[in-house]
Image (cartoon, rainbow, N blue to C red; front, side):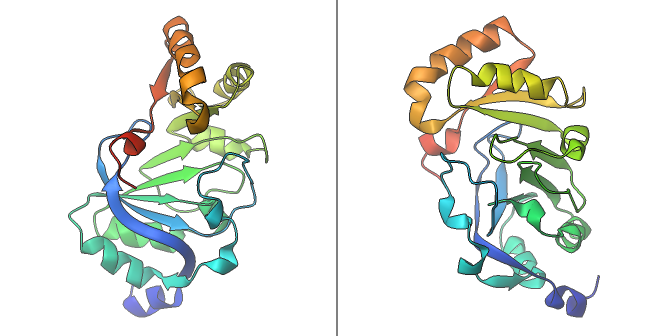
Length: 206
């Protein structure tokens, strides 16, 4: 894929940074994050609401993004949002994989999944229904628990996701003291699930 072609491809990007993946199956691994701007899901407890309006964030070329990734020793690149699947991610992921990087996606599953992925984290939200392909393609199902009723909601998604997907429950951060004991008990009683802890918030990295 030539430089000129890549230079013509642009995405709205809220931020990009090198850090430690804090959540889910790949927690603890170094990864470069590219957070796209734009989201039409609108979770009330979202901790990056500044990402919702794509017009607030500059368009950046794929060439520029690739060069920034190359300035780090990372092997992994996470595309997150916002909702990154609002955009065609084919050119970005092909360019990253051509350079030897593993590509990880974080999505609500509310839009068609484009691009080539080594790992897809599917985190369904109540505010906009997921598409069936998210259940079919997910490597990891991560459900946020914000109240007691969410355990039943989580099981409804576990019933639909492909059988190879890893299952994670993650507490809504502002309610962690109240709900984490319930999640611990639930996972002990239902060991097909694992607990996803937002460890980046404990070790104070982005």
